[in-house]
Image 1 (cartoon, rainbow, N blue to C red):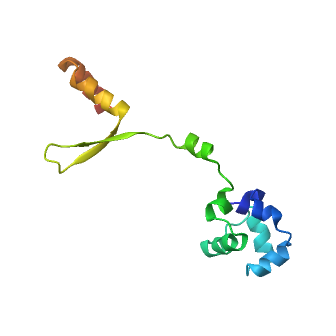
Image 2: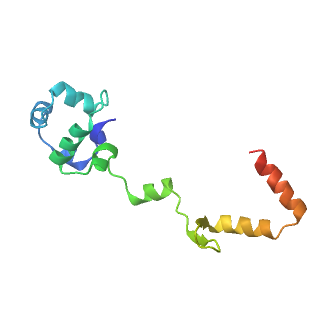
Length: 123
């Protein structure tokens, strides 16, 4: 893990030397250098000290700045529908494509259902 990846604004703006920063953060200069170069990974308490010192979140410290477009591209957003059983003791959340698939299955012939069950059994 490369702390700050050299990208976060707070790290770039810091005019302190590795020696000064390592003293402030209570670590050796060599350890600080290793963290910057991703030769060594800091423990959680050290990451928290970095985060507090630079006044940035742990996410920013470790991953750099991530914009909303990157998050949306990485994680597809599904709209789920809550369905409850008749006894209302159990519920399930389904996406539109899952509901569509279930409805197609329900209205298919028994022969088509057997094909689908056979296909799924092989998986």
